[in-house]
Image 1: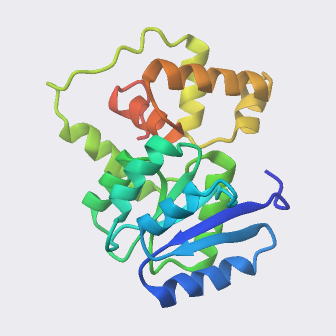
Image 2: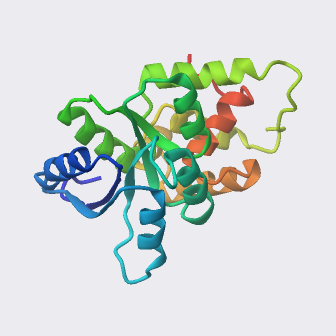
Length: 223
């Protein structure tokens, strides 16, 4: 991604001062455009329901909100708008919140006391790579896998080709399509083709789901 590429952002948080403050911060960045801000998930869904409105690329989504909270909103977004990437926000650094948000498609997780530079960096990373999981979040994902125990039924990954497994490993390392293509000496179009096939085979809705599938089924390891 070139830094000049415009990224459309929606901010959904019931704390008006926080919402407006982060909106002001993001508007200072030349490649970021805030197209919507609202106080809960229902506000966002009403906005998305109007086809004349600009569709956000990324939603900064508070976990705890009235009317429709972040977890509930993430479920709906994953089903109806899987191309919209979610960055979960929370004042609580709770593993349970992280688990819920990641399970329902969050591409990144940020504590609300994060430095402005970290917020901007995370937005750009999610836009470029599809996901941006820091080590502590990856550890939580790994613990989610362990907690399921040996009795949980696993998907078969025998239908994944060797090349698809290679691509999946690189996706889980959060490399961009271009970086994967360069490393494997294939075209970006071929990488996208492998990604689409794996999404279909694993019944994953997005890259986050694909990464979770890879970890939970021990196709790859993030450790």
